[in-house]
Image (cartoon, rainbow, N blue to C red; front, top):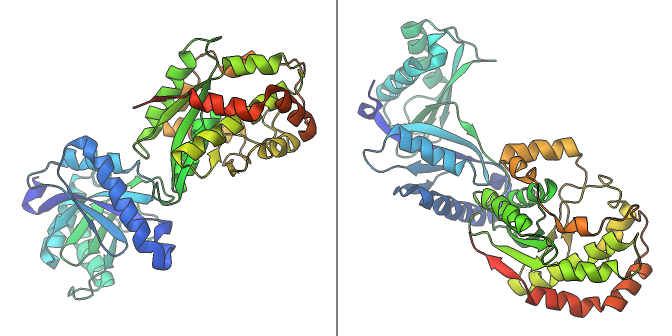
Length: 398
């Protein structure tokens, strides 16, 4: 069957919570379209992205193949702000043409070959179309039943034919790819994520991308007391996450000597929290320089002994910028499942020499007192030290 005789392959995108934004919806949609166009630049395919009422349509160049349409659909499935991506056929606004497209789509489907239960769902955005939605359902559905003998099941169909009548054309499709949901990256501002080589921080960064933040990344390396392995790992994680937002930046701080100073401060049980506060202070300094309005961490309450409510409060006290912790209520199983879904788990599980291993007391403090931590920072001259650390950062471009 040659579908091009009936229509052209295209991709139809369904929006999520953006449609609830009222008077601000236009700003979110324009940001989303800009992100879609940026994402599709990697395919080297000239497309036409058009905004419609409640949907976005991507029209491919004349002569485009179904494989190219599938590549477009798979690429935009990584763009936050979309809930469904449908590889559709664009056909003329004529009931008989729509009928032929529906019949051929069903005839090509694997579900039809095994006698699946089916339904037709029509939506008429252009009320000038001669058939109402329920009339179009019966018109196409009856023909499918006559042609293939498939049973109709309106409640739990195994195969659904979708027909959407738009302003200039009709879209016909079956199935779709789930999108990322959330808000378009960049619609909520910019943040700086503290990126370790572990499982949690990449997931935390991804969750904030879904809430519309464009995220830059800051990695603390144990250099000169560790190798560059953790940097390579952080770089690989950022590359994996970059497909959700584009233009990601990784900053690396050589943190080993600062850690050595904390170790020699004589406060063994407070070392982990003192280190964490210094990291946050340094991150805040970097955030000011790159105009990020918040910090992002992968903290989860109670996941490790140092992540108690008291210690989290002690960390918040170190900086003025808000610290976003999207995983604070997640357990490890949930975090690992999300890491597996977004493709970062395999990288995070690779061995590396993390800077945190340099400060590993036998017993960490679970109820750190802020005044004790400030005394350590006074001895270290932490305010000056974090500026020096920020001055020493290196940018790794993707």
